[in-house]
Image (cartoon, rainbow over the protein chains, first blue to last red):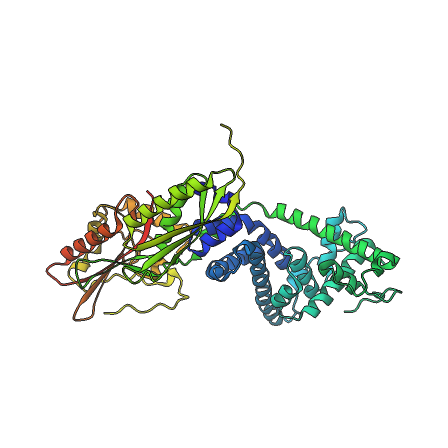
Length: 189
Length: 193
Length: 141
C-alpha cells in the first residue's frame, strides 16, 4: 500500500518520517503544507516570505521529528514550528528593514502591517473582507497572537512560548485584538 | 494600548469573556446565563470567531494544494539529512575489513516488505537490542496500519514470516522476535470490483 | 593524507569536489566504481562519506538513476551530486578504502558485501588495503 501514503494516518507517517523515510515526510509536507503556508502568509504578509518560512519549518521538523513525543499530534507541532519560524523571519526582516530605513533617513516601517488602506468595515464586501481589513489595522503584536490562536489553534502557553512573553500577556493581547476586531467589524460601541 | 469601556456595568470584562471562549474558565459561570451585556459580548466574540474560521478556510483554499508547484519547489529545496542510525556489522572474510549495513537501510527494508502486504502500511520500526554486537538477541517492533475490513490475524502471521525471511536474507542479526502492533486503521475508498 | 572535517552545518554545495588520488589504484576511481557495480546484487554506489548523504529530498532517486545510467561509465564526473564514490585514505601504514553501496532486495546482502570487499582488494593488489563496505540502502527493485 506504499502508493497510498496519502491515505495513511498522521501518526504512521510521522513515525516513518522519524525513522528516516523521506517519502513519508513528503506526504506529511503535502498534507499540511497549505495550512502552514496560510498561517505564514497571514503572519508575514506575503506568499514569497511564507514559502521561505514553510521551507525552514520543514527542515526543522525533519531534524526534530524524533523528539516528537506524540506522533499523532504532528499537525499542531508543524503549525507551531511554522509560527515560530514566521516570528523569527519577521524579526530578521524588521532588523533588516529598520537598518535600511536608517540608511535612508526614514522611519522603520512594519511591512506586514502595510497597506491598511482607506477601506472601512462599512464598505467591505463580506465578513472575511471586513476581518481582513480590520486585521491589517491591528498592532503587530496583537495580530500575531490572533493568528497563532485562530489559524494554528495554539494554546495561550504555546503562543507565549512562540512570542517569548507570558501567558497573561497573551490573554491580554488576544482580548484587545478581539475587542478591536469586533469593533471594526460591527461598529461596536 | 487600552480600550475604554471594556468593562461592563456588571463588572465583568471583555478580556474575561475572551478567555472564557478559549478555556471555558469564568469566575461566575451562572452569571453568563442571565447578564445581557455579557451575552451580547459573547455573541459578538463568537461571530468574530466564525469570521476567523471563514477567513482561514478562504486562505487555505488560496494557499493551494500540497501537490502544487510551490510545494514541489519547497520539497526540491529541502536538504534532508539521511538517518543512517547504528552500524550493523556483517561478518568479513578478511580481518582488516569492516563490513556493515546501516540501521536505516534495515528499517527501510522492513517498511518495504510490510508495505507489500495487502492492506498494510508500516509505521514506526524499532530494533530493540544492541545491533552493533554480533549475535545479540534482537526484537523487531513494528507499528502497523491496516486497511479497514482487512483480516488482521492471518495477515499479521504471514507478514511476520515474510519479515523473518527478508531479515535472514539481508542481515546477520539474531532475530528473537517480531512484534507487530496494529496502531491504526485506514479508511480506504471502497474499490469497485 | 586526511580529509578536512566539514562542520555539521556545511552545505553540500560547499563541500570540495574532493578526489582522492594518493594511490596508484585510486587514481582511476571510476574503474573501481565500475568493478563494484559489476558485483551481482549491487544496485548503487553512493558517495563514500556520511557527510555526502546530505541530499535534497528526492535526490536519492535521482542519484540512483544517474548511477544506473553511468553504470558502465568510466569516471562518473558528470554527476552533479558526485562525491568521491570510492574513497581511499593512506596514513603511511595502512590504506583504508571506503565504499557505500545499495543492494537489491533479491540479493543476499551479506554475501554481496563480502563479494564487494573481495573485488576492492583484488583491484588494489598487490597493495594491502583495509576495506570498509557499508550498505546504505536495500531496495525492492
